Image: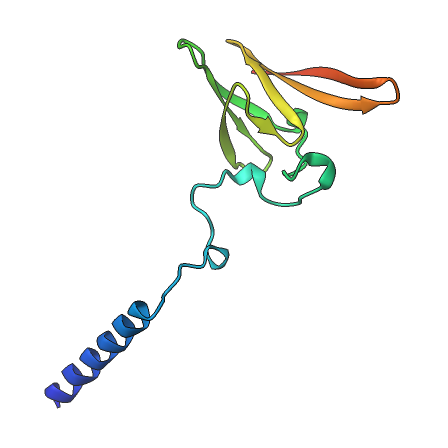
Length: 125
């Protein structure tokens, strides 16, 4: 009986190794990407440049590390999902313009009838 069980296991291992040798391809659409920031996932809108439409003023600024040449900030949404930002990153349509010791400054370029207009907003600790 034990020999039959070992033979069945070996047959399964051989079959799976043959399937891999015949062209197994990883399909990322079937698995969640563990490296994707949680705030860039849900709804995609064309006006948000292919990113989730998130208003930074609806987020909570939870931490800032500003003692280095590249300061970083941590923001959190209402569900408790957080992400790290650095200067130049985007949150929806808003670009991180600067990270100060007590605030993050976002800019958004809006297209108006008279041309593009930059709008700045601040998220404070």
